[in-house]
Length: 225
Image (cartoon, rainbow, N blue to C red; front, side, top):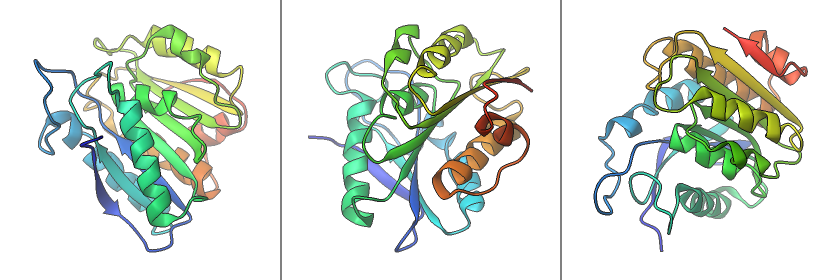
């Protein structure tokens, strides 16, 4: 049983796709429920709004609030993502494609759940990961990892290792290093938000991309900004 919740940013009645936005946030003592007011949740509100503007009413944008804070080994955020994907299928139909967009532990969940049936692409922003998690099978998926080189919480070297491994199975993997970017994404936030939104619109809806996203989708794996 899950206590996760979905919050609509925008939800047309018959969307061509769904962007599922996943928050991070460290664990606390005990099993604490996620609060809509915690910083890790609020951090994803402008990202969800930027994605909503990019998809221009053609896709639903939903924010997932996890069952508990952090990463509980008995019920992880990946389990909450799977629950959310079931809710999306019930609400919008089983064949609607989904893009996962997550930050920190939400980025980890996005990468680990990218192989789920309805998922076509994933964006991980400053993901907190273990290097061996790149062994996940993401065949046919397109993946973007964006990591600040001044992130003192989630080591960028780990996410780079994950990117190298994911490239063995993924249709496309792009890794963007954001110069001066810190974990909270406050510095150079427009880069993190813009890349997440444009990659979602391109991979979920087939929108034309330019700049970095065009380069990544064209086959360039490593980009520095």
